Picture: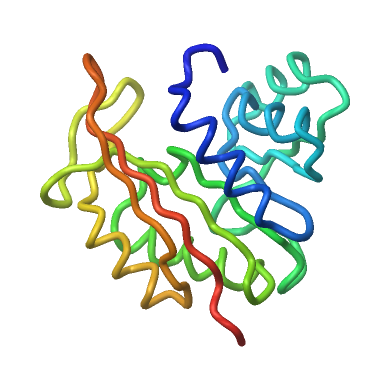
Amino acid sequence: MDAVAAADRELVLAWAQTLTGPVLDVGCGPGHWTGFLHEHGFDVTGIDPTPEFIAHARATHPGVPFRKGQAERLDVPDGSLGGVLAWYSLIHCTKPQVRAVLMEFARALRPGGGLLIGFFEGPVFEAFDHAVTTAYRWPVDSLSDLLRHSGFTVIETQSRTDPGVRPHGAIVATRNPA
């Protein structure tokens, strides 16, 4: 977490403090955000499709729940979550895949439940080469519109460019009433 921008830690913590109920860190990778939220007293579980990430997360954050899982199939009951954190976990998804994932998030979140998405920001939706596989940049407005059409109200958007890194975007949203 020391390598994470202070503004991101503050945003995630402030967002989590607005939630009621369990939080799912979708695409948790090595588990640093899940561990961070757990350390701050939140009922959080991390999921990731990569077994190696889950093994690393469990070893690094003992006592924090992690399981194998996918964004498009969260394996939780309808309306059971207070929050979903998707921090850079949708960057490898195409537009149709993101639409499907957002519908799954809306299904799993209770009305009024919170969603926080972190992503690579850009002036147009476009693919670029990333360390493992193709990733995508999103304009904040385009991703916000997609959220609105998927059953969410956008509460806050952010974008910034820190020295030496790609432009960053974040969107805080809540699930609309049923």
